[in-house]
Length: 487
Image (cartoon, rainbow, N blue to C red; front, side, top):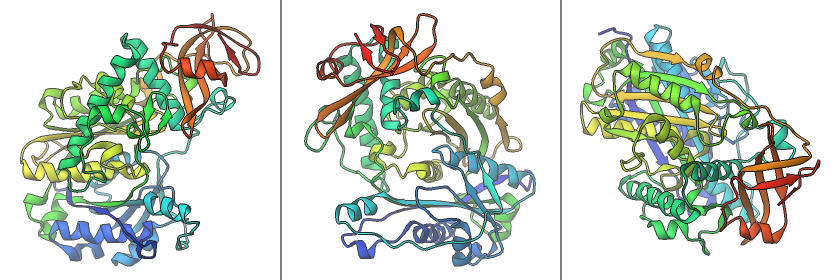
């Protein structure tokens, strides 16, 4: 075996549940705690002093550069300091980049970590309390990823720029494409989500460990308010969590030098990356993902595997449509378990750092089942940025492989778009946004007679009610130059 073959030797997950906010640790200290716990998991707690690179996944905290603080606290103050851009893909993309650095000989021992305290922050806001946060200084030695705006001019002009607006539009487009009624689709999706909940009930590091049935998931109520049609709260990512995690990676040579028992080793076999068009308006359609299809299938090809060879799968699950689109593009059946954590609703959705928890859980399951294969998908933006990884306790047959499939994705068809269109359209998809218990505004993705995409809104209360029970995809409508839609 190549002595530079990358291997995961330590993982950790931390859930912080505090009754008194004065006892809450801030994200940067949870990262430090996670690092020490991952070192303990490796069986060699002293190894942190030898870490050559500390890589922190960008969170929604305001630290200027937290990697230096983490490095100092764990005893490797001379380590390379690395940060990332925003995106739920960044954990897998950073692990891919780390594996490349290790197999090339650039690095031999690396720490990845990240944390969020959305639950504590929500409690603090409710109590009109401000949680103290440390100031960090200095610059990163390296930044992984590239910041790009996730919303285009056409969507922004209609104030459509949040995941809770755009993903339900994708969901309704997918339902229409599949020829399902609103009721049929809600039953199917809630049944799938109930399966995720059942996995969370078995996951010791899931945030919500009480299984929720399909009827409760799809039925709006006091504790399951509607957020955006067709999604009540229990179909949304649960960002109100205090969660941290860490992964320690090294070369096989370093693992042997450190004396890490091989029962702790999990090999990343391959990794791939690609992104769909950053502007949703440019997508050829709103129910598929060329980047998932091309980069995800390529990851399996590089690993020499088919979907039926995968024993464990974790498909990124911020919203149900993300799972359905990925499953369709990869050839995964919705009847199999598509998560190892319970997903971002039930396992917990610490924003950009979720995938570190899915990889940590994958490592635990693979250690318990030597020789089995695991597959992790990651998604950032609006089904935009994607990364994939294959894992096993079994050593790969060759060196770690990584490919960026962007050139192939960029060759796929796209669509023209317009901002201020005045004229007849066909409704492509839509959603209804709620304020409290009441529908507030309807958002529409529309196609002009020439096939350009444009966006529109409606605040007509009768239309907003009807949109929730009647199929609006494919209906004729008209938009004025200010983006107001009438039927």
